[in-house]
Image 1 (cartoon, rainbow, N blue to C red):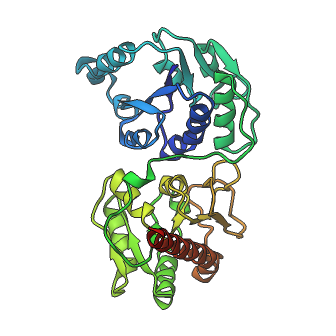
Image 2: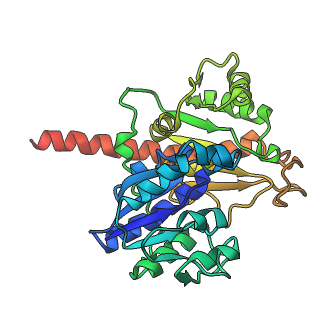
Length: 349
């Protein structure tokens, strides 16, 4: 069975879709997916064993100049690529008008969220099968339910599994234990204060834990260098693509993240992470997986969804370190156990 999946963005939304693919793959070993995704996130679907083809789109870029998109042939090329393959089913897991429009012309039944379940109810008019999924659940669980109903299998009762090819991303180099600071995010109010990042880095120095800091733009680079200034155990990484950042995360003992897509990537790679929430709450879209700790700011402006009002004043570095320490200890025990197992296996031969 071959399925065309439409889930274009954002980074967190793309990652939240992965456990549903794992469910489907385990229910039907013959199922294969082609995935339509925003060009900036096209690396991620390739890491999942159920995905054959990744079909990039550039809706964010195209809509800035629709006429140019039409003239330069990008839209035509996308439609041609989609029509090259025969599909048994199309699943729009986005539930938006922009994603529903991408299903037009595909010669296969289209399944998606029902009017009451979709983020944009009008999108359901494009679907042959409208599937009702209760709101008020985590995005991962909603997507898992959508897939199970669309593909006709019983939903597993256990927590969803990302099943990424993590071994392809692991850093081969030998290194001391380190923590990754995932400090970049979109809303101004989601940023944990730079002074607290610096304080946390100084506290980790007393624990002999190194820190690595990635960045994606000039503002983030400047913040990274300010956090690292004069601290020998803190490394500001060079600019990396998404695969490069994933490799750094995959090799880490743990991460500390604000509400950002890279925090979800840490969860998908089964790396313990303390995620910091200020204006947003983690209940419906927080980092999902084992070893994921959510710390919410307790101030009066916390959780209100305001993009600009600061609400992190009452979440100090010391509290974050207290949440981080058990994750580091658990990883160290895992590493020791793996090493002992490797020695025992060698001795057996």
